[in-house]
Image (cartoon, rainbow, N blue to C red):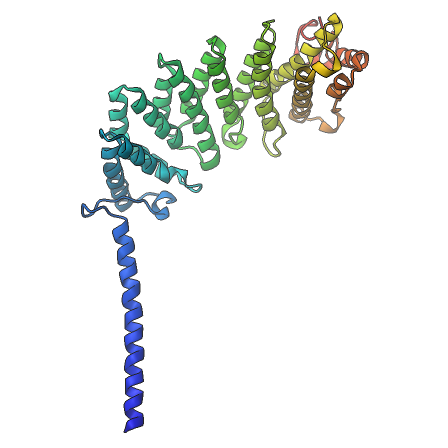
Length: 384
């Protein structure tokens, strides 16, 4: 009997232990669910990955999204600045998920509609910037409309910030897919083009070119024309800046470097395509960057070896862009890219071998050269 009694006691203990473990799991799940709601019963305060990453957002998930936006949206437009800042952080959190889906971004954009309206209606700088922050992460049609409005703002600081959010829209679209139409993207590019070609503000011009630079990374399978337009516009704007003859060489070089860096990266990406028109603009920018130093050498005004670092950097970036642009041009026209030679003009300039630099650069860019004839540039476009 004692043995049987001991057995029953042990069995009872095991059953109690299993029951306790199950109750613990249930309580844990219950606490987890409670963590997703606010003290106001049913108010969603956190959106789980299952919603943010959903390929298709269902009705229940849309209700949770609406509840989440309602909870934090009320606080985002409140008078408590600290609470408003925390609420904005919470509203941005779902879109920082690297696997955020197109379906979620569209549903989230719809749910944020009233909040975005309220932020824009407030009209103060803080509300405007908050609306732009959300818009850039959404990468949606509504987000595009807000950014376009920001780019038209009379405050140049807001316009610069809006240009940055346009760039963020391109990055979001490239990484997570389009939650907007091609027309939306094209409207952003057209506005950035207009700004870059008309503004005298170097910071705004730089911000616009940097934004277009992110557009150069859009996948060409879906956005070939858009990607190519970004290369073309950037290159043309930067090339025009170089040819102004302004005494502020540092600013002109900075603009050229921004554009050439993005264009070179785009044209050198394996598996991505461009267009002949975009390549022509890239070739023109690369050649113009080399031409700036070439003109100084020809005129005998090139600084000494110890003081020409800016020219060396400009030429190195220009010839790198020229190399990848010419390779892309060869491939687009059914020729082997192996026939394109990599020049070393910057090395010659850095070493002080100005004569060799002048002769080789002039041969490549001068009247009658393949670059001038193939792309239809004027004979004196790069060598004057």
